[in-house]
Amino acid sequence: MDFDTAKTHISNVVTSIKDCADVGMYTFSKMSPHLAAFVGLGLFVKNLIVSTAEDANSAVLKDLKEVKNQIRKLNDAMGSHFNDMKAFIVAHHFYTTIAVKASVLTKAMGDCSEAKDQKKHEASLKFFKEMYDKHSPLELAKTLREMMDNEVTNPVKMAMTGDKFKTKRTFESWTKICSAVFTQLFVVEAFASGQYHEQESYRQDKISEEHAEFESLAKEWKEHYKTNETRFWEHEVRPFVEDIQEKNTSKSNVEIADLIRAQLDKILTKCVYFSFFQRLHLSATYSMWSS
Image (cartoon, rainbow, N blue to C red; front, side):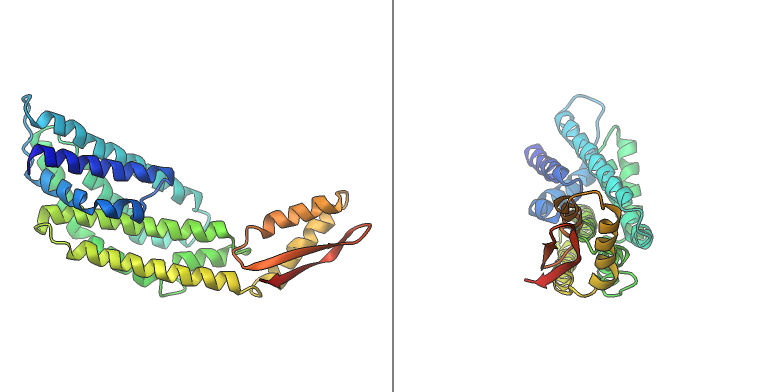
C-alpha cells in the first residue's frame, strides 16, 4: 500500500470516529460508510515497518497516532454512558459479557496505531491477535443478538421493566448503547480482515446483518411500548398524579398540571393526556385517551 492511500484510509478512519463525538458513542450510520478505511488501516499496520530514521513513514506515523487518540476519547465517552446507566442491574450481564470485551478489542486496535518502534509495534499486533482470537467480534455480535430474544437477558426490555414510567429516555439510551457495541465489533472485524482475512468481508457483513436485525426488533419494541397504554396507568401513573396533587395543595391548578405533564411527557406512548380543572382545585381524575 502506498503512503498516499494509507494517509487517505487513516484520515477517513479518524473522520468517522470524530463524527461520532456528538453522541459520544460508536454510531453505525457514521462508521459503516468508512468500512474500506478500517480494512485498509488493518492492512497497513500489518505491513508497517517502523524506522527510527526520518523517512517517508514519519508523516504517516503522526497521522496514525491520531487514530489511537480518537479511539481512546470515544471509548471514554462510551464508558461515561455506562456509568450513567449503572443504576440498572441489568447492565451487569450485558456489560461484562459483551461490552467490556468490545472495549478491550477497540483499545487493542488503537494500540496497533501507535508505532513508537518496531519492537513495540510487533508486540501491539501480537496482543491484538490474542484478544481477537479470544473474543471473536462475530461471535460476540451473535451472542448479543441472541440476548435480545430472551426477556431476562435483553438489556433494553429489562431496563424498561426497571423504569416504572417506561420513559423515552430509557428506551433510547439502551437501544443506542446496544447499537454502539454492535458498531464497535463491526469496525474491529473490518480492521482484522485487513490483517488476517485478505480483506474478505464475510465477517463484518454478518455483524452488519446482526445489527440490522437488532434495529428491526427495536422498532417493534418501540411500537409495543407506545401502543400498550394500559400496562402502567392504574398502578404507576395514577398514584403519581394523586401524589403530586396531595403534596402541592398550595400551588395553582396550572402549576400542578405542569408538574404532572412534565413527567407524562417522558413516557414512551402514543397516548394523549388531558387535565380537567375545577374552579377551586384540580380534579383528582387525569384522563388518558389513545391517539
